[in-house]
Image (cartoon, rainbow, N blue to C red; front, top):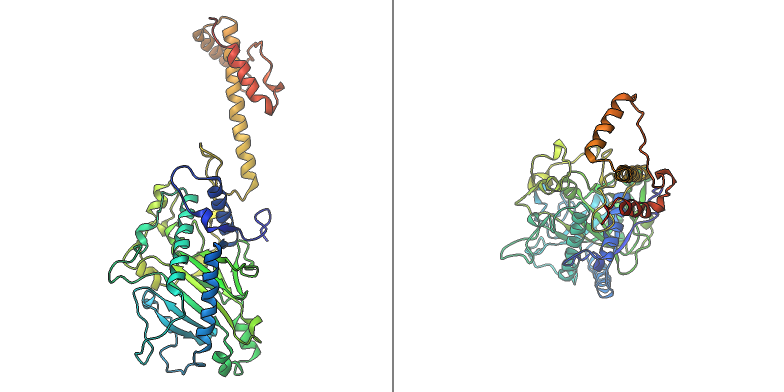
Amino acid sequence: MAGNGMPTLGRVKVCDLAPSEGLPSDSYKLAVTTLSQSLAQYSAAIIQFPTSDGALLRSGLDSARLYFHQRDSYPAANNNMIHTNDSSDWCKTSGYYADPQSWQESYEYRPGLSPTEPTNSMEFPPSGLPDIFALLGKAARVVLDAIGYYLNLRSCPFTEILDNVPLRNNEISSSVLSVCCYARPSFHGAQHHNLTEDEQLILYSDHDHQLDKSLISFVKSDKAGLHIRDMHGQWILVDMDLGPQEAVVYPGLALYQATAGYVSPAVHRTDLNSMQGSIEGRFSLAFKLMPKSMTNLSCSEMRAAGHGVEAQFQLPVSVDDFMQRPHSNDELFNRQTLQSFSVPQSQDGPSLWYRVNEADEKAEEERLQMQTTTTIKAAEIRSAESSQGTSSGDCRQKGNQAQILQPQGVREQPQCNEQPLCEYKKGDWVAAWSSICSSSRPPQ
């Protein structure tokens, strides 16, 4: 899958990603590392929820199944429930929508909006949506903050572009929870027999992929079928082995823009070919953490943290404009992404950054070894000069004369009573340093 990297998607407990005051715990460091490596390698990770939250997600899927089973069959062509994909309404969608092109139905729950049926009657949604929205919304913010920690940004770096928690009076949520149904037989039965085999293959070809415009997306499904393209361009089935308390998380285009391209968005598709004979279809819960509409996506936090920002990310972009404009996939590929960058070792613990290229680690080790060797060698020279009773001024003068008289690349080796440096092994550097320091102390 990924060469010398992680063999499978990383699994992280959401409770381990929750930040706390003071120094980061070992469990937090490990969780952030696993999450970051998985996102860099597979553009996705698996988040594990507590048992009680897992029961809530399962009940949400059961409610979705019951909701869509009682819906009418394939809607008429003039029905305004047909999804028009109007990008100008990206933060206004709520209620039931149908997309016949992809055999998908969805009910979108957006706090602050009360959906109505085309007959202006109140619609009864699937149960438990407010609790599921709160659960996945909180988890998405925790994941977003963990990515900020990984990028060495300040705490809660994306708060200014997110909705208030909780929403204020008359505010409408930018984020949305979608209850989705794919390939329901009673929905697509009328048009299924009109499609030829070639048309079905085109519908699910490799070119049929999607990019969410969210910051963070969560997906919990009852059947496998979600494929995401990894860093090598291979399609990975990411929800095949999901446990009852697990959900898939992946970054979207808005996070790609806000991090100046350091975090690549997930390219995904849903395979429905395996559900042709299913009697009920595939159901899923999809939460998208979106930036609020009345704000801008800028890379000021990335610049403040010392990251380089390319020209295409220099100017702030209005969220409304960003959501309505098309995005070419070509500009997202063949770029340096999150897995290509590393930072120096920190003073308070091991680095959390993932190095994909092992040659970088070897070069860093050789640089540190050379630096240590130079320091010990200088200490040996000072020790030799002190034992011979030579003043520091005379030593500098003699050293300069020796450099002038001898050809370039040849240096006079000082006489030293200490053990030569070449005889010290890597593990004896500490002992060597102690020996040199003790011998160079002035007499009491």
